[in-house]
Length: 400
Image 1 (tube, rainbow, N blue to C red):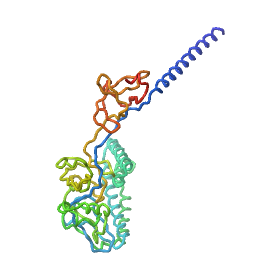
Image 2 (spheres, helix red, strand yellow):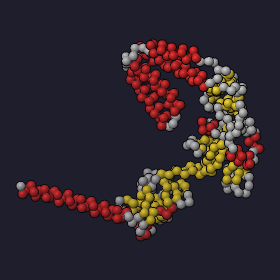
Image 3 (cartoon, rainbow, N blue to C red):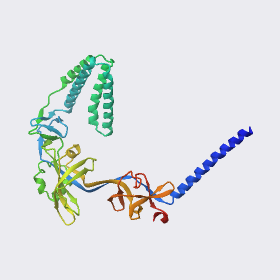
């Protein structure tokens, strides 16, 4: 009994000693670190850029309709169309468009069921490959929803249903879909009985890229008139980006490319004939541009700039006037406050906290801001690394 008690006391004494040492060590550590103000080294990105409002210009042709009916477009914005293509149909009411859409949905569903039904002679071993396709399509739908791409998600949903129907056929859950196909055909017949044809159609006079939106500047702005725009003209368009387009229901432009005109403020207007990039405030896409011309407007640094861009997406065709950034360079590195920089043997670097010690780490500066620099990101232990604790201020005897 006494032996057991003695052993227990020794274990308790040993645990207590360990606890005391840990507490003392942590207090010393925090007391030491409290001597210093520090920042955690994090990755940071800087863009040298000029912010301005850009006006997007193309050679555009208005698409018009004299009908007072409801318009149903056959093409998504940005679609390439050929001369004579049926751009839109005009109906007497919106219910006719809904009926047309319902018939189209039923027809697609029938086509999907027939394709799935063709797998009735497939080997059961095909089930695994179909199941993998189902998982992939499901992941794509989730990704589209997270990105707000709901139209793409709806399109993928139809494919997912077809794959699931195939899986049911291959695994024997369903023998065929004849009854369901017959039911859908009956529904098409019922909708067709109350559906009436469009009162008119709109066709393209020439081929190009179609956009349903208009802003009233289609006949004023083009690749020729852009050079005659004054500062007042540019500011007027920026202040009033939309006006009446009459009976226009859309427009066509003949090229993927566009020009961008705007007024920038810069002390160094000498970068014409160079390739830069543009970012829109509404997204993260980077558009490559060629600086066609820069015209100095006054002695305050205001200049008229014309850019050429050979890219097109939904954001570029959505609005005539957009907030932009003309980007000269992007820099990526570890952000270091200027007050943290020290020189040891004429080598630039910083002190970092390493346990209970301070160690000097070199930095290779890739960008200089007003109150900070960006240091090159490296895994070399002699240089500053991401997540190091950079000492800003502390006991002078440590930081000389």
